[in-house]
Length: 90
Image 1 (cartoon, rainbow, N blue to C red):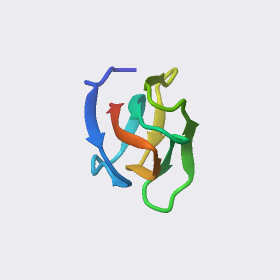
Image 2 (image 1 turned 90 degrees about the vertical axis):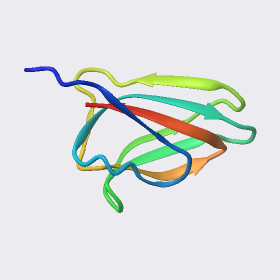
Image 3 (image 1 turned 90 degrees about the horizontal axis):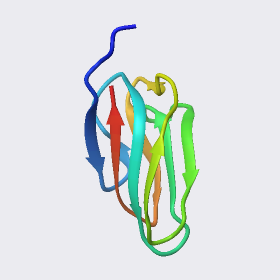
Image 4 (image 1 turned 60 degrees about the vertical axis):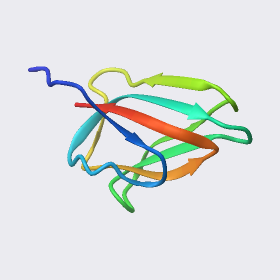
């Protein structure tokens, strides 16, 4: 399988990354106090593809194994106690 260039997008709230079809390869977040949670769906209203809870007040990096998670659009539906998320995709 030919490889693709990895790109990144940063989100600071719920909503679409606006990148179109993609494979999520890695996620980095900066959490705040409380109960940090990030949920990503396959476009708006689509199936949940990632639903992650984190420790408060830390930086986290989540590597996605294999070819990543395929979505028609990266959509953050839950963004709780997180300052920002950077999504690396191909």
